[in-house]
Image (cartoon, rainbow, N blue to C red; front, side, top):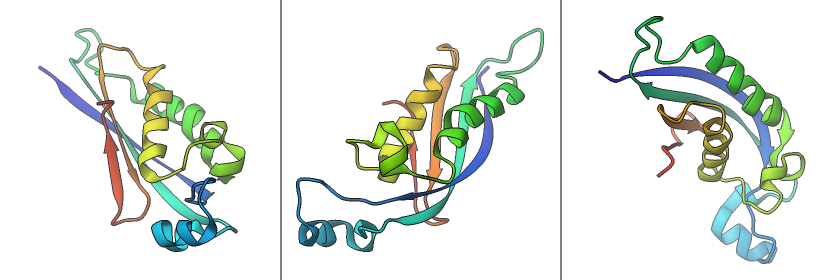
Length: 136
């Protein structure tokens, strides 16, 4: 029997979508107002889902208190109220699209969650725009 547990979190961050090797005109054509050289921000909503068999002793797939702490340490402390392009090392040479942010978060959490568990990250950039990543 496999069960999925979910933990929600949020963080606020600024970013600019652009490619350094493109001029401003090309960046504007592809990324629109998201390529603003002065950056723009989002109130990101995050759902982290862990799937596995419940432990026979505790009944937990994963202790949600531990998951909460991992998300705080790996995501909220690292990303909240930051300029992703400038202050978060993972985005020094990686365009901080919602897709890339989700992959970075997944990779950071994957290192800290037991391999026997499946992991999925769902990141809402806006209430209507969101991405999911399962490591595939």
